[in-house]
Amino acid sequence: MEHVADGLKAKDGVVFLYVSADWEGRKLKCPKFRNVEVHVAVMENLLQATVVIVLRGAQSGPLHLNLVDHIQRYLWTVSDSSITKRTVEGSGAVDYINCIWCVNAAHGLYKSVPEAHGLNKFPCDGAEWDGHWYMYKRNDPTPSYAHIGLDVSASLNKQAHLAQAVKNAIAEAAVAHAQLPVRAPSPTRGLFGRMFSRPSSASKRRGN
Image (cartoon, rainbow, N blue to C red; front, top):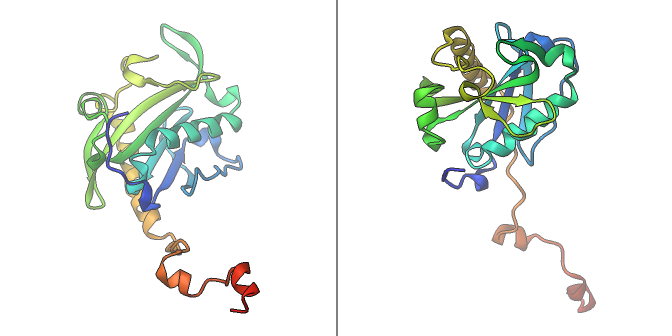
């Protein structure tokens, strides 16, 4: 993993998962990863068995691979082969999910890949966004980049229609994020917290 700024302490991560119409009608509720909530919605005009994962918040930089892996593992639990299996030219029938994940370009993740093959510095919501296209085969947790995996033409800078859908997902995630309730701050054990903490058992014995 490339170096990313330490955003783990931010506790501000949130994920918006947009799935293709293949999953429409299914009850989708992806569990949280640590404190990071995953919000799921169906999006039209995506390729078969394709999802767009929009990672938001400073925390998403250090956790990007963990979050993408968490989501692809969940997707397999709600996906039978009628959704994910299709014929790929030169490879025959293949059972796989396209996972396109997007993150703030300020994290500087694998910069050469979006420049050549992905979505590179798309401006939205006061930031720039990079997009990466992974392919996951069933029963194989290790992804391959789309353009060097099953389909050499699977590149966001070659498939304008899909790239536009990804941009739409990034924009929709910005709106949805703004509408979420403000998170309550985590309990603190600083000076203020200690002043009003319960007395210890030893203090009780001393009559304090």
